[in-house]
Length: 191
Image 1 (spheres, rainbow, N blue to C red):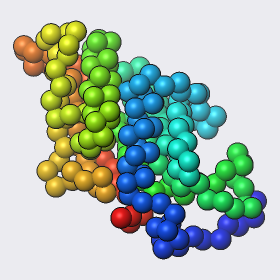
Image 2 (image 1 turned 135 degrees about the horizontal axis):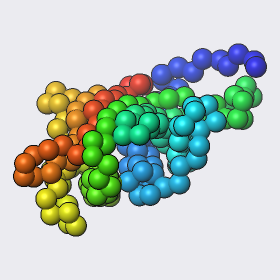
Image 3 (image 1 turned 180 degrees about the horizontal axis):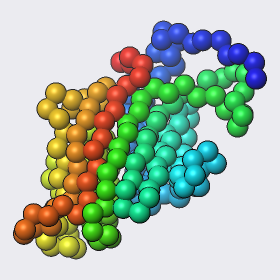
Image 4 (image 1 turned 60 degrees about the horizontal axis):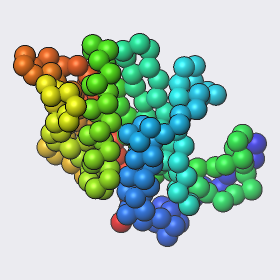
């Protein structure tokens, strides 16, 4: 494979804005896990699943693995780079933004997962950003004793750098049914 020429930050900034990357995030996230999007088996990660959502010059890619109740993954938004130097799948993408997440489904209660998806859908539809996850608090409309919480770390609430923890709690007595720790950031300065 031929060596690709490096691309400069200025060239990236001429091709994409922060608003475009954020719009790609909300559209891709709503079409993916939260919206019941179709994930393909990963060709590179045993047991991994991948969801890809192209939006013009950008692509949203969510990859995750689960091993029983344990799960983790990464979401990346990349810019398509037109080039004669092709990667093995014929496309070359430059990562602009990413988020990692990991956690556990503690009880196997599928209602907890459906609550997470509902909280995410509600947030993404409104284009609200709380660490890339759901609203700070979201109550289940079907499971009356479950509540979704998302605690974004105080100093990391922006799309450019963030971290936090989301959980579904059964109350009473307050037992956690599900949680994810997450973090992410812009990889290229954009305005």
